[in-house]
Amino acid sequence: MRVTSVPEYARRLVAALLCWLALVMWGSAIVNFCPAITDAATQGYRAIASALAAPAMVWAFWVNTPRTALVLSTALVLCGGLLLIIQP
Image (tube, rainbow, N blue to C red; front, top):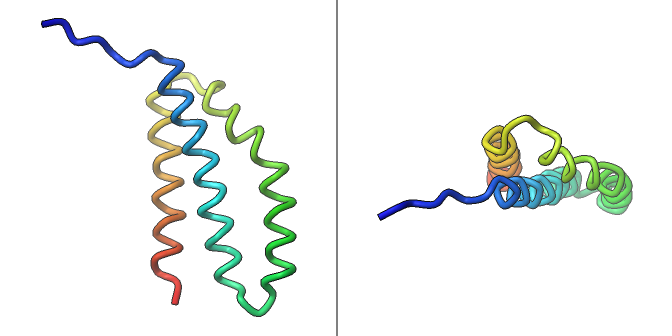
């Protein structure tokens, strides 16, 4: 039985989507961290996320290996999720 590997572009696409998810999770953590200034934090996050979304997702296709893109984007998602979990 021959095992076929996942194509490189598919791994890079998953990494790009994980980068987008990391932006969402980190932004949610930042907005939840500052409940007193939620409106200002939300507006600031939207501006920053909009500016970073395209370069963050394209970065997965610029990096040398798809494994590096997957590992780094997964780490960013997990850190953002951890920040959401540890908040009161």
